[in-house]
Image (tube, rainbow, N blue to C red; front, side):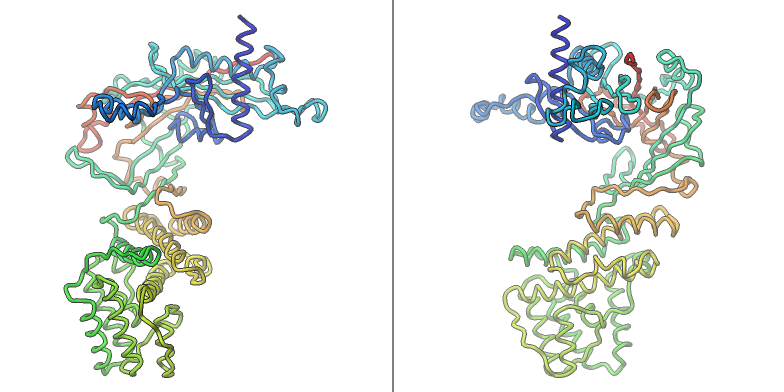
Length: 603
């Protein structure tokens, strides 16, 4: 019996070692156990805070036989069952199986139990420690192991975990974790007290000294609840607090806490002052997609007059004016402001008074064109007016569009011939929009002294093809969405906005466009105290710890407005679901306890 246990431990540890050394994502063990190599924080939700990947063991998803699909076509009941099977999420193992896997993991790391399960023999032959490596060199310890549990035991265990503890390069023990959970409640009388949590910690570790540290998270911006109805938002700004010397359960984080903003902003929120510019960017994207695919789904026009009519009226105004070109430009720019009807905040942040001829033409065409024919007819009118010398418009010196080059040539009566056929008009209009919107973004970022032109060179480059230029412009727009959200809704001071701008600019130089990315910013709690001090936390936790270094052990108790486990469905009282933040009502919390025990190996 003992030899079989050792053999099973060896086989299991070899499987983990292969998964770790080969950097694989997953494997199947004993046909019904799936082992994943994943980011621990993402899957363990506040339960695990290490910076290493972890192994997660769970029951394999039910196998769907292709023959079942054929039967599903004739049996509606089977079809329903098939759909349920497909939608199953992560599945837990039994407590007995989870304990067995953890015992194998622990044995495999203890070289004293048997040489057969010591880490050294698990190395590939090419890197065997004898004789190629000195005796003091040991293999890298196994990554932490976490097993999903079915909560069928009296304690309600949802996870069991194990993690090696090392002294130098040698594994000196294993930390064993157990996680228990309970359904949501608003009854604070059922919550553990801080003294009871410390007593729970003492039962396992008998420490001479203990420390109690707190964590909490609050929502500052995002989805809101109005009369028990949630208004969803894809954008969110939360703040994480960490502090020492917790005095009571659910205490408000002190102003001495470390605070980190987690900022995730999605473009297109109608509450944002950036929404009008977002719509303009969407039209730009439509043009870019049309060039790429040859098909364009035009937006509904904002103007009631046709694009050709607006362009003709604009050209007539330029021909008939007796004022200077600069005065005319200013006058027209003011007129465009009025027509856009944007919010007062948006005007103050983004509007420019120096729109040149091409930018004003872009605004008129963007709000009115509904076909390729519209674009071609408008540009033909403009080019004809330039050829006959009817207009000599003013443009910005750094304009890079094809139309700007024609305008410069018209000053010298030497215009190139342009064939406005196929997608050429759309190509020219897209260039006009890119030029205009780049200047809009420069106007804000430079005007607010958040960056310099040198730092924007990557985003303003016109060397790349138009598709890449649009992608970079979208990145710049997303950056502005973040800045405006943090300045307008959170009122962050200049130094924090400046730092956040640099973080975003640096991120997007090397990373693809990603609205789901969460930017993190350190902040002083005093700057946002009015947002959270009267609110209820989304999550709150306390951690009692003792020991140092690899011998440090912790006992944690967590409150959260959502379950911290994905593989268990909790029965939630309907009344508790409805008593969420607001109007003096108490928030309903799920509770989670994480206990740790240290198993020391003999020297």
